[in-house]
Structures are given as C-alpha cells and as structure tokens.
Length: 144
Image (cartoon, rainbow, N blue to C red):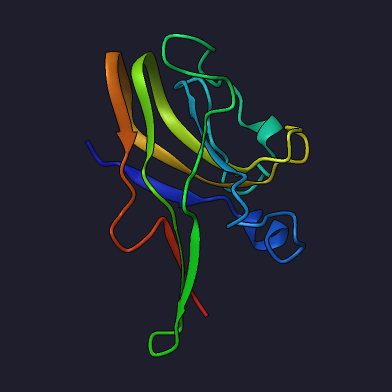
C-alpha cells in the first residue's frame, strides 16, 4: 500500500496571503474516512474536509496539534522545508483513509488547508497507539 502526501493547490494563495503561520503551534492533523474525497484544486478551508472521524475512542474532534514545527532554508539547494514532530494518537479505535493537515484558526471556514496524507487503503485501528511518521526530509519541501 502506497502512502502519499499531497499539498492542496490553494496553499499557493493562502500561504503568501498570510492565512497560515506554519510555526506558531496552530497546525493540526485530523483523521477522515474514505467518504472524504480530497480535491487538490478546490478544497481551500477545513470546512471542505468532510467526514472527519467521530470524537471518542482515542480521538478528539479537530485532531492533534503538531509540535516543534520548523521552517528551514538551504541556500545551496534553494529549498525551504517545513517539518514537525510526528503526530500521534493513544489507544485509538477508528477507521480512516486520510489525515488532513491544516492551519487551525478555530473556525473551519477560515482554517486553511495545507495537505493530506492518503494511506492508500482504510486504516482499521483498534485500541492501539497510532503515529503519522513524517518523511526524514520534512513534511514538505519548496524549491525556490
């Protein structure tokens, strides 16, 4: 099963419009069922990210905040990198297909989407710790 991470296209507008501050502690990751169909070109705010898993059984609505978010730039490769600690849930019992990354304003209509993880198939977790492990090269990179 191939796990992929994809950036939402609207990020190219919300990031320079200062709707997202990647390192202020408000970036969150939520889990969504296979009934959500991410649309790279039209999904802009969290209100578009439907079918979040329900509250309870190791999950809190809205997901988890990413810790220790960083932005770095390497002049030699002209690459900017966003990274953070891995996201984890304890004693989780849920079925989901996607994890949606967003900048949380507390209002789903203004919480800008960043990207999503597609696990490639439904994850059926039963009372287990579950961690989204980010790539060693960062959550995402931007070539400048």
